[in-house]
Length: 297
Length: 97
Image (tube, rainbow over all chains, first blue to last red):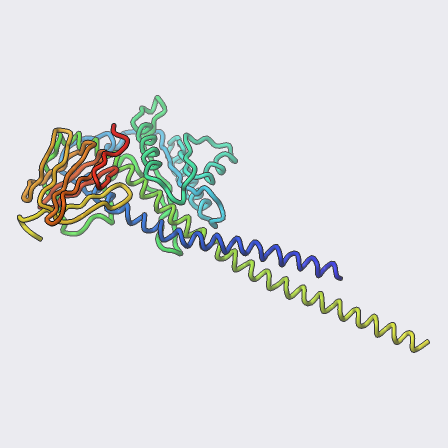
């Protein structure tokens, strides 16, 4: 009997201390979301300016750039999967990976080989555990991405894109990331990075005609300089969105974990009280029964 | 918007906004050489070289910005400078190519 009370007491104590961890993680995630969201919007002017410039060049000139030209035959595709470094973020990494699996399936059905590029330790673990190959992995800082990392990824992807198929290059590149819709809704999404489709819905303003630019040096060279930057900026934007989503997912997961812990503590407290009351009742009835037995004799 | 009087300048870096405001002129270094932009310039899209670019605002001191590559566009007195890495104050970024 007393043993049972002790067990409940231990459970209450351990749940209380894990609840403290959940609460702390929730607070940390909440405080970081604001910053992550403002970084998403801080990167917007650059993305807008670069998108405008790229669409101006590609719509006004007849330049056939390798990055914008569709390959006649797509035999191998690269997929960049953005996941988180750490868990405790609910289904954040799992749903990004599920989206990636879906994309793999579609690509394989089209007879394309797949080359995976992974960002985040969770994604790496997923691939390692299943003994799947991936080309490269970047870990660290998924909840606060640096532009330098985006540039590195951009360079790596660009160089395999510009390599011939026979030498291990790819013909198209997709990115799986998590769109930050709001604090409660984050959805995994796929975008095709290369060959480029230069349309961005949020940038196009109605009645905003692009002027006829002069180019310095030639349009080809301007495009050469612009496109890698455009790719980097899109990768960076995807990383920032994913980071904000990761934090939002973590905050929500920790909130419900904390709520569940509170609920558990309540249940254990009830059980402990019942056990204590039962012990008292039993002791009393033993005493009464003993007294009865003594007076009867 | 002033039709001929002044330029509307906006400088953005990859992950943050750097500076914006009205200016009298902008001078920058492109791969073909230095270029000066005054109000009423024809639309142009040019590649920036690493180095410094200078903005003369309508009021106040001349602003020098160190950049390490990027591009800029001019159209109807609106100048958008997109730099990979921009620093107001003029120090040329550490990693010059």
